[in-house]
Amino acid sequence: MLRRLLDRKVNCKVLGCQRRPESTTSSQTKEKNVLPKTDSASLPPPWENPWLYALGPPQPPPKYTQVESSTEEFKWVERLKPTVIIPDVPKHEKYPTPSGWRPPKNPPPALPYFVARNRKHVFNISLERRRDTLDTVTVEFNYVELVVLRNVHGDVFACEKDLKQYLTQKVGHTIATHVNEPQGKIRVKGADRSLVEQFLWDCGF
View 1 (cartoon, one colour):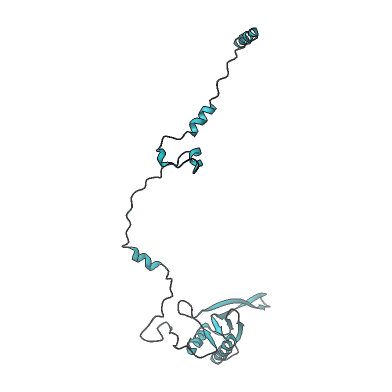
View 2 (spheres, rainbow, N blue to C red; view 1 turned 30 degrees about the horizontal axis):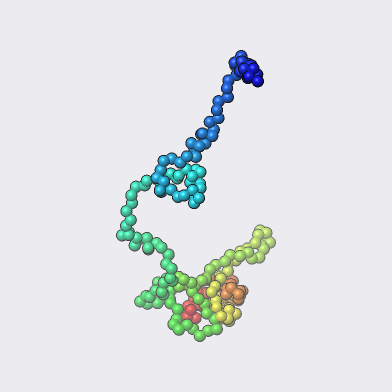
């Protein structure tokens, strides 16, 4: 047995064999897992934060320049913030104002319907452009503008009847209307938007 070991040693020297170096991976991993020297009292126990001991303690936060808080200029910021509560109806010396605005009557008119205003205290009247008849010469559809009145509460059909009668007397021809009762909308074709608004002024809404 001893002779075999000696022969193997001699053969390694002849063939130029070198002894395999010891593995250093275990020592390197141990060095990586070792936490740097920090205050042990400031670190939580391993069972509460195991990632801290596996990846190392977090880096300290970056140091920023010191700032000073001042509330002197915040009054200008408050002017830009949207108001949470709808403001009251503005008061003027005489009505209608130069823009034609006037406040609603108090008490409201005794009608079976009511047209509410929006948060800006104006009527919710808009224009809607829709496709109409087909032009046989240009083979293109004509478009027509419709006046849409929203926020109609109560008997919407009674409001549509009075509005149609009022506009017919103003323009001198038949007015086409369409009622959307669930949404409280009335569409008007053949009359200007200002006439619809004037009807609401005269009613006292």
